[in-house]
Image 1 (tube, helix red, strand yellow):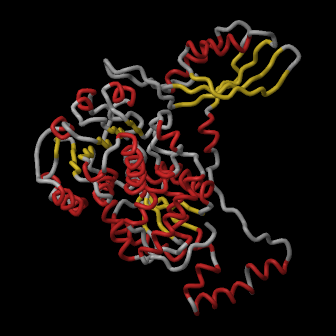
Image 2: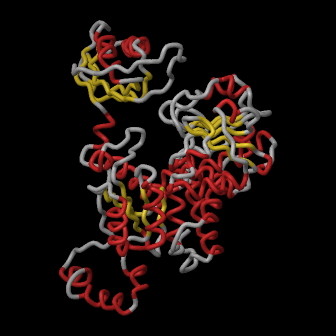
Image 3: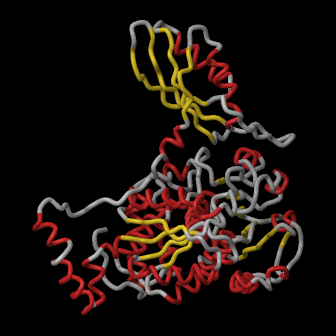
Length: 486
């Protein structure tokens, strides 16, 4: 077995229940009753969480099976294999990484819509026929929306400077994430997307690239670009271009947070204008959350950074100056600790780091507190701890806990809706409409049980969001045409 690096757990932290790594064991076992049970028992005792079990081949006296197991860390793989080998008669034939296998060769490719089966087909799709279409677009540039794939295609632009929670790992290492976004857009909404991973982290160069490639795309999605540069890049591209520019790390998170909050308020029976909301972490996502909440009518938003309640230290940050003015319009400038901020708060929204709040913080909040601890993979507080401390509704950024705040609930439908009406930008009204559409996908029965966010793979969400966004674009005056194919 290859050398692996085990992760450590902080002293006093509760046992982890998150499964972050997958391994598939191909084993050969004697074909007799009870053998599979012995193997699965050994896997469980070794700390594995068993997934799919498949028969690969049945021989005369043995069976070859693939067993996929979730582990807390890859350091547990060696112990897992040893435990399985300890079962009498069992052979481990191969240890595979199913995640790496899925990514082998990439996750996306170009598909052909018009087959070329004859020379007449070739003449139509390429020379000489294509020249007629080129002249048509040259004479009337708006025809590009009808005669090409522009109206159904977006560019996903990144510099790899803020990839997931991995940090500045560069454009090549960020490419798998961009391919994943492209895959989800195509699979869930039918929107074509292509990653543009740039070998520059100069904001002005990124802006020039976005401007230069815009003629071939109906929208631009900015992804995994670090703050404060991401604010400037989005603002400038939005001014320069007549197509939507949407930074998903900011607005995708903010839209889904607002959707969850709208439903959570129904559970706790509170009004949005009466809320005191603490937003911890004032990077891209935190500032976007604050903005959309203030725009939705939240009465009071308190921003908290590492030093505590932060006003004066933020006033010189060009990336967030507008947001700070919005904060001050709703609140008097104040100072204090996170504990001071959370005392009497109705809602906590964390987009910061792991385990930064304690149960005592939750206990100091107002009646029926709402806790959205979104740091990933380890949240600001574990949901079970928050609930034990009195939280009425909890959400995280994790897929193995209820109420996952997942951007994929927003961006596929938002882009589909924006493209359907050939929107020129993304307005606040379009984002608010997306949030309301996401919230509406939660059934009354789910809401009664504390589920305030639809499941990420609920495909009905995309249709709801697309229709709502298209209508909001029309009402905002940024649509070029009426909605089609929704």
